Length: 441
Ligand code: MEV
Image 1 (spheres, rainbow, N blue to C red):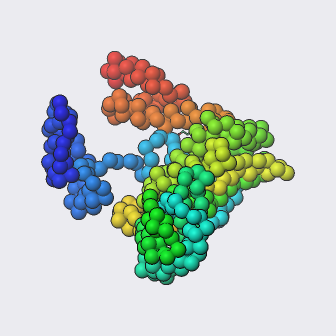
Image 2 (cartoon, rainbow, N blue to C red; image 1 turned 45 degrees about the vertical axis):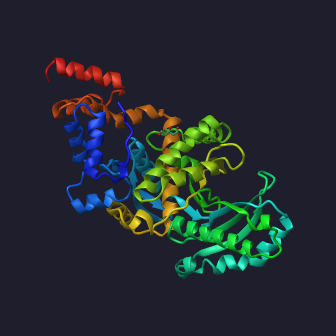
Image 3 (cartoon, rainbow, N blue to C red; image 1 turned 90 degrees about the vertical axis):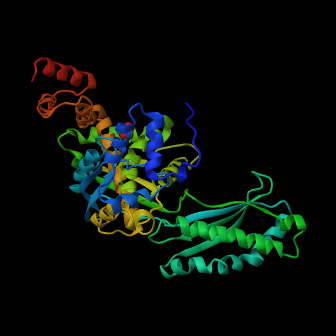
């Protein structure tokens, strides 16, 4: 079958659905009905979601869960998490509760600087380019005034602009490397608009610069784009308490627990295979809050993983120590987040979530997200170094297995009861359901 299609984007939503249903499904009516079942009955709300992206055919649900009791800098937060993985929200909530009686999370903003670059090729005399840049630098600021005016009113704008020589890496490669303050917005549109204006200014000023040869005047702008690597847009989150205060129902020997925990973190610091999974656990918390607050989790992921490799080797984002009887566990991560602009004022659930967080500034949201990441990491390491993660994970996953097996309500109650004290495995649940069905319960 020929599955190619031309003019798909011009099809109406109904035509798109019909094309897909007929092309890929033996029962097109059923396929259409699945898609339309996911539409919101509020037509305006559905239209809003349709318009977020292109070629929308339906909605793709993710559960929105809540992790309460996050004590961050002496204030309690109820944190929204959009995520599909069972046990993540429970783990965050457990870790939050645990630390709420041990001083809570202490977070600080280390910096909020964003970065963008104009990448260009100049095959001429470097010294001439440097003098050109020094002489013309103010034009880059004046010619972006229309773009920066509003941001400046909010206390942000362009912080600095440098010419960077990258010719050791690629012949003729230079950059305009710019830094920005974007206050409560993530700033992608603002930064990219400034950069595209920088590129235009660069070309036009170079064209009229008398000291440049014809070739030098015709430098090539390759691209102008923000960087999602923001090592100076940094937040630190930490928990700490005297070792003996770590004791609780699963931590009978706090000294032994703390030592094993620190060793587990040390392993992630030196061993990349472990570091990736360790950091993935942190991202379980981070992505879920980033998504629930309408931020770009791909940008956050890319930036954080680059930061994890800043020493030349991919390593743990978090660190832990025991010093003078005090257990401390902390991390510093780059987070370019926004609480205005983008989806924040468009997506009704994002607005709801931000309101639940009491409409945080971008700086406050950075601290909340970092605390969620550290909590997640604590919960994972606590399970891994004590009972293992499968016990808790499979208990949380039991609901998914029950759904997969299409258990009825009576079966569901019996299964939950049966596995309350028993180890959950997929095979054990299948066997038990088989037994129930044979016995016609
Ligand atoms: C699972 O989503 C995350 C963990 O693998 C993280 C970790 O190993 O630290 C449990």
